[in-house]
Structures are given as C-alpha cells and as structure tokens.
Amino acid sequence: MQADKRKGDKPVVERRHIVSPRLIKSHCQLLPAFLGLLLLAALLSIAAPGVALAEPSKSVEITGEGVTNPVTFTLEQLRAMEQYQHVYSVINTWPTKKWYVAEGVKLRTLFDLAGLKEDAALIKFLSDDGFEVALTVQELLSDKRFYFPYLMDHHPTDGSIPGSPADAEEVEPILALRSAEDHNDPAAMNDRDALLLVLGQRVIAEQTNPLFLKYVNRIEILTTPPPKWDNPKADTDEGEVPAGALLRLSTKRNDMDKIYYTTDGSTPTLNSPMFNASASRWWPLRDDLDSVNKPIEINEDTVIKAIAIGPGKLNSDVVTFTYKADFTGRAAERAKLPGGPPTGVTLDQNAVSLKIGSTYELSATVGPGNAVDKSVIWSSSDTSVATVDNTGLVTVVGPGTAVITVKTVVGGLTASCVVNGPNQEQTGNGQIVALEEDPEAQEEQFISPVEEPEEQALVETVKAAGEPKSANENQEEPVEPKKPDEPEKAVENGQYLAEKKALAAASTTPEVSATSPDSEPVQVYKVSVDAGPAQLQLEHNDMDIYTAGVFALLFLFGASRRYMEYAREVEM
Image (cartoon, rainbow, N blue to C red; front, side):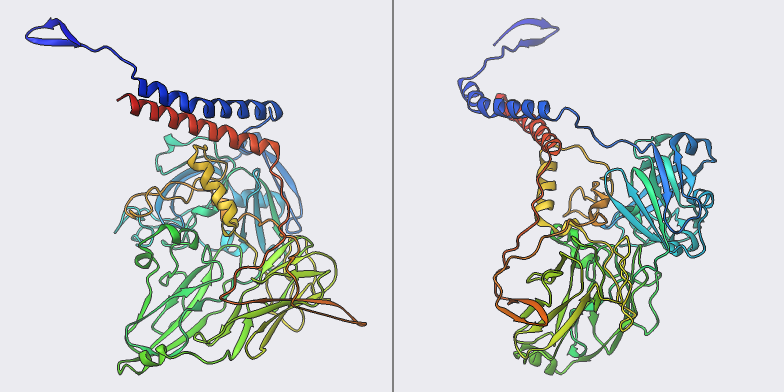
C-alpha cells in the first residue's frame, strides 16, 4: 500500500485487494457441497415446477346445518359490502401484547345473509392452508368483545401483566380484507392475509391472537352442542402441606385452555387471575416460567377454586382444592416418606366417539400423588375396532365398539372408556355424543401438532435454514426467549388448532392375549414409569415432491447466505 494522493494535509491511502491462499482453499472446500445443493434444487424444481406459496383467499363459503341458506361470497362481493374498521388489542400465548388494525365485513352481516339458525352452537373457520379455528356461537356473537386502548399499561409487551381496562371500546368480529399486525395506523394495512378472522378481547388478559386465522375460505356452522374443556388439576394432593409449599395448576393441553382461579372461596370467571398465561409449547424456551405461570404459595389454610376456559368449547366444571398449611414440620417429614400402593385410577374420558382413522389420547391419573408405583397397563377389548398404545393413545381402525381399559400394575385397579358405543351418535366432525349412562362424556376437540417432536424439529430446522414464513405464521414465536421484555417473533397460529394426523395401530408384542368364543382378542400393553416407550407403527406419510422442493430450495438459500457471510468473514 502507498500514499500517492493527497487532499489537504491528509494522505489518501489506496488499498489493493489481495486474495489469500487460505481464502482460496476454504472456497474450494465448500464449493462441492454448494454445487451439490444447486444440482438437488435444479432436479426438484424440474420435478415440481408448480410450487407456490399460499395466497389470500378469493372467496368464502358459509355452510353447515346451522344455516338455512348456504352461500358463497367472492372477494369482489365482500369488497362491495359495508366495511368496518377498528384497532384491536391482542395478546398471544407467549404471552406478548400487540396491536392489530383491520378492515372488513362484520361476521354478523355474513351470518344474517346465510340465515343463522337459533340452535346454531359451534362455528368452525377453515383456511386455504388447512388450519382451523372453532368458536362457540355464544363466545363469538353473544359475549361482548372490546378494544382496550390501555393494553400496554404497566408493561409494554408482557401479556402476563394486565394493562388497564379503562375506556374499553366494544368492537365487532370481522372477516378482514385488509389488516396490519403490530400497528394501530390504518395506513399500514394491506391485503396479504385476507381473508383474516379478527375479533376483540372479552377481558384485557384474554389471549385472542392465535384465533386470527388467515386465508379463511370456509365457515361451517354446526348445531352440535360443544363439549367441555377438561377440568384443571393440581400437582399436590389436597390436605396438610408444609407452610410455603408451591402449588401448580394444569390442564390436559395447557394451551388455549386457560385456567382461572380464586383463593377467597369465590367462583372463578374470566376476570379472575389466569394461572397458565404461557402455553406449554413455550415452556422449554423460558427460564423465567415461574415468573409468568406463578405457583400459588400455601402459607395459610387455603381453598382454591379453578375453571378452564377457552375457545370452541364450554367451560370446564369448577373444581375445588383444599389445603391446610402446616408450620410444625410434620407434613414436610411425611412428604419425605415413601408412599404406599395406588388407591385409585381415573381416566379423563368415560366415552369418546371418533371417526375411523382418528385418534384420541386418554389421560390416566393414579392416586395418591406419592404412590410408590404408578405403572399402568393399557388394553383394548377389540383391536379390530380400536387400538391403544402404552401412552393411552387410542386409534380407531374399524367399525364397532371397543372398551379401552387402564389397569394399575400394583393393586389391579381399573378405569374404562367406551369408544363408539352403541348409544353414541357418530357425527361428521367427530363430535362426542355421550352415552345415556354418561351424559357428561366429551371429546377433546383440538389436538396440537406441537406435541409431535418430529414435526416441531422439522419446522425449527427449516426456519433455521431461512424459510420465509407460511400462511398462518404471525402470532407466537419470541425474538429472545430469555429476554421477556423484548417482543416476540411470529409463529404459526394454526400449530395448536390444526388437526393431528392419525396414527396406525400399535405393533407392540402383547403381554396378555385371551380369546373366547364370545369375544374378540384382547391386546394388553404394560407400561412402567421406568420403562422406555414401546415401539409404535406410525402411519407412513410420504412428503410429496412439492414440499420436498420447497424445503430444498429454502435450505439452499439459507446455506448460500451463510456461505457468503463466511467468505466475507474470512476476507476481513
């Protein structure tokens, strides 16, 4: 380098770029892999030339037994209708606060044109990309919903810290043609998410953001009564506990089924404190979980009442947990002692009605909480109708009725669930109609693909490679999980509302197999808390060539970008 030009008193240095041998060698080492990715992408692009990202819906169909006049509205017809515009206050399940501004057609207007029946009970919104959101008619159209202008009070982003409910404005649920997330300025709106379901909050802490379904193309209105949410459970048995004991509440999903509770003996409502503000999908990403889902400390005799409330189902029963605080240390000493044998086992459902090919995961509870051995055996009375694996996952494989039984290894205590009993009506949407002997039987309506670790790992891998966000990917993912003060990124809101793929019959070797002239073979599985999971024969789902092409291209883009960054770093 030399100073051969001057400006004033300061030399102007001319820099010559020299390529180092180390850089050339590193490029040569990476070049074969890069070319291989290019070749793979080219082959897949030839095989799948029609790959395209989801686009805004062009029409919406309103149908179902809950309307008298099934109708389809085109995008042009919707634009010609009266438009409703408003800002909406929103919280997701991380939880994070945000604004949404949206403009579209009131759902009441559309339902009036379709002839909503008086006995309509459940409304399902379905999107172009296969996701689904369900809401009861009561919660969507009868309950008042609001925009809370002071949502950000007390904390600008943390949704577990309620804002001020002052000056709330009632808002309408709409099918939005234009919208903007994280904005309250109408000038920011666009139509890329149309048709978008948008609705207000009933209370300032309600988490509505996951319900904002993009690309709605069909609305089904049903007259089937919705089932109930599962009752909340406590992680500590009732009775005397050490003073200062920390109690945690949970539901089967810990997702949109939110737990509201009281400690003063009153009946909990939507306005009561929410226990599980952060959904279970985020728990592995949070090192501050107890600051959001705060345990209840028992420092005096306490009566806790709890209820599960969420979209698309009726509220659970109100359950009561009674505790007596012990300051003598006796309860703490007793807690250290090993427990005795199980005294009972229960299932979360006594009867379910499922279509062939669908699944339902039964949940068994063995008491007491400190029982020495909580191992159970699952069995099906007819494996040609329904199979059950060692976790309680029931798969319906044929017509007929089967009884799923769970039995404790110690003591032989049992509980049973009837699958597609003779007095259960099979409905089109898989809705449970209870047996006459069990009027409170119900079906778990939403199953979350987040529970599938393989699917979740695939999503995370693709995103890490630079995948652009897909259709319903605007609600949930945090930017920095360990920094709760920062806003979170978006994630697919349909992840926990989308229908779970069915599993095939379990292929574990039966421990007991008995046959009689009057009965089908009974296949029994034993599971221990110390044993590894039994092998299951999963349904073979081949990835179609279009999806494979997209994944390869996205991986290619991410890899090439990282290669360029690496090259620049080496040059410096």
